[in-house]
Length: 300
Length: 247
Image 1 (cartoon, rainbow over the protein chains, first blue to last red):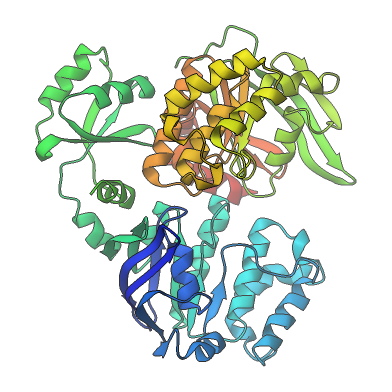
Image 2: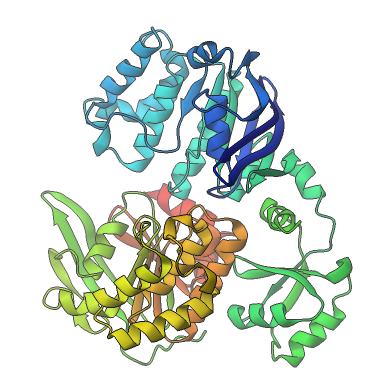
């Protein structure tokens, strides 16, 4: 449904996208995971025909992003990163407006947005600018779906949204996926990766990993340890100073540690921590999560 | 834990309330934050966090209740509060069109530091952030992670007793996010109280204590481990979801 082949984009000296290649199958929920400035929005803008690539090629639903841009604009649904609705129009007026742009009306495709629109219905006469964050996000999703697009581009739909609204949003995406919609969604929240069929991790314009979440995690082959203790900051500082430490990162109230050369024996580490006065520190093996993999690959 | 619970609290709020017309944005919240504590202030969108922070920063008069911040009263001494706190948010921090050095000089001036003090602080700050080579660069040219570290350091330029961090780490990469938290820990070790909001639930675990606001009220308050035990949850994410769902 989406084919990206060696796409390149620069802004002056800054390389926004460098040889990015990926492919998203029909009905797939595909996540583009990476921090601000990694190139996520540039890729979205190229695929939605708002920006021309400098090199490479891409197609959306078999239409070329340069030659067939009009066809893509008619078909694709796009929810940009910044709140893109008309603040001065009401909820219902926004929906009507976006429907009319696509030469349709709210009723024709209402089924696809019914469950998303339901909590908004009581506020249909409220100005969009006066909605809460979670409500704005729901309305923006409705507007991007009103022409029943086969493919949906969602650029950071959950940024700055609280944990509960984020979870509900992902449940909605899974419902849409069941209806056969292909979804490319970007997020800076690593924990959302596991909710996608496949993901691409992007950093500084480069893809640093692509696959199912399980495949990415199985690529992390070093033994990983979770260290916890009473005084987490001092523990972190001491772990950073330990000669055999390869990497150590805070993870909640634990510190994830790998040792140099993938050493699996922690007796020297135990001894070191005791010597540093961390009598209560515990060291346990732990399964890596996507964020461990991202941090690991950022270093390469 | 390094924070000191025996001295005067950094923040003390008692039934602090803010009404807008017939809407109660903040509904009688009571809590205190100790000196040197890292206090996480969590809540759903629209729960009243921003309104509460604005009152604590001396930017908004409460409707009722009482609160002191750094020992000053939010009703009668808002100007004293402003001088004694630092503030940083992802949205508002540095001036993009000023250089690194100019931003430091600007904030130093705003907080009434002498020229000599500004010069000294500038040196320390550039050294600490290893930004010497970028001192003359426009802030908009810096990578996001550097900007945020610089913004945090600038918010501390007048040695405030408390610093308010409103979603300080939004959008940064996982490595920079952790470096930022190391700076937070280091600052708290120095005795500065940290009051922080975040939507990253793993960051809630980095706090000494957290509060969770729902519909204007604080519905949970305590150390992350205590809240997880109490709600029979594995992670702060679960704690958050359980509490916000209940309402």
